[in-house]
Length: 301
Image 1 (cartoon, rainbow, N blue to C red):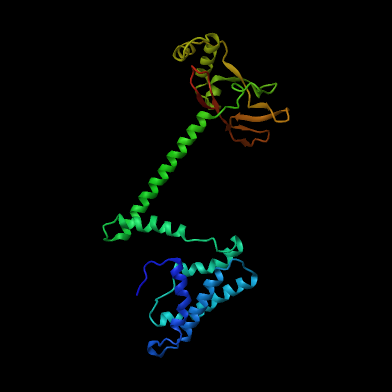
Image 2 (image 1 turned 45 degrees about the horizontal axis):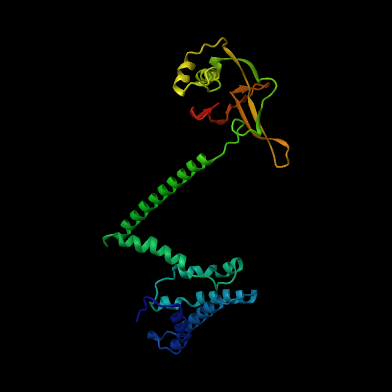
C-alpha cells in the first residue's frame, strides 16, 4: 500500500509501530535483517531527537551519531533493490539539522510550508501549463517567462516608486530652503575662460543659451517660457570670457543650531598638475529646479 498523503498525527502513529513490524521480518535471499533494523532504529532515533524542545551538547552529539549510523547501514536498501541511491534532498537536509539547531534554536516551531509552496509554484503550476508531452522543456520555458514577467513588474514598481519619491521630495538646495545658503570661494579658480573653452573643455555646449535665458529672466521677470527663450536667444554679450569656480558648497543649520557644510559640488576639466601628471576631469550632476512657470533642467557641468 502506498500512502500519497498523510497527516502529521498519522505519521507519528506509523513511527510508533514501524520498528515492531520489521523486527524478525524475513528477507528474500537470506540477507541479514539486522542492518535494516539498525538503519530504521537510528533513523527513528534521529527523528525523535530532532523534535526535542530543549537541546544540549550531548543530545546534539547523539543526533549526529544517529545520522552516521544510518549512513553506515543504508547500503542494505540498495542491495535489496528497494532504492537505487540516496541522492534525495530530504536525506541531504538531515546533514544541516545540528548546525541549524545551534544557529536558530530548537525545531519545534519549524514547518515545511515554504518548501511546499515553492513546489506548487515551481513544479505543479508549471506542469499544469504543459500538454503532458516533453513536459520538462515546457516547464522550464514557462518558468523562465514567468520570471521575466516578475522582473519586469518589479522594475515597473521600482520606477513608479522612484517617480513618486521625486515628486514628494523636498529639495535641500538654497533656492528652495531659506535656511541653507551657497558658499562660494572668494577668488575664482580661473579668472577669464573663453566661451569656446567652456564649450569644449568644460563639457557645457549649452552654456551661452542658458546664460542668455538667465539674463532675459532677470530683465523680464514677467515673460513666459517661450518668450524668455526668444529673448534669451537675442541677448548680446558684451564680454567673451567668464570666471569659473571649480567648487561650490551648501551650508545649513544642524540640530545643534550650528552652521555646517551639508553638500558640495565639484567640477573641473582635464588638466595637468605641476609635475605634468594628468588630473582626470570631474563633472558633478546638478538638478536645477526653476520657478513654476519655467522648466526643470538637468545639467551635467
